[in-house]
Image (tube, rainbow, N blue to C red):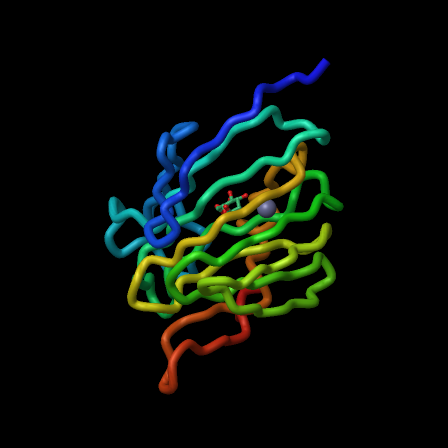
Length: 184
Ligand code: M6P
Ligand code: ZN
């Protein structure tokens, strides 16, 4: 017998709002990202991003999904970004669909290989298992994208908090600049 009933929710493509909401939005402030940016929070209570979940059981047989909305802004030399994570179950994969704004997706393996991919309206990013992923808002408007991933993936933030990503992204002379992370 099926475990779940079908459901439908409306995603407003531009803002990322869900109607009806299906779970409690997860709000991350600058303070919540202490240790992820290179410098300490400048305005600790300011919201950096929100994740609007559509929760299903965290099982291998389900597909977890959510919308992420990253505000425009910077802390130190870095644009607002997500914490970023490896999947706790390392080989679990994920798909992003860009909805609005302008962003970059930083991907990295545990042995230090990395890629920087675009996120904007219509992009589909495939995040294979084994690649840590962090999204960065490099524009002046909110960055909105939808993510779907294997239900039992889980998030390992500790590895990223300790090591960071190989590169950082911040404002440069000709737009967004990708710099080596001196503390990686
Ligand atoms: C996307 C997905 C989620 C993730 C969210 C915020 O929606 O990758 O799994 O939770 O972005 O990123 P993080 O978990 O790294 O804070
Ligand atoms: Zn993920």
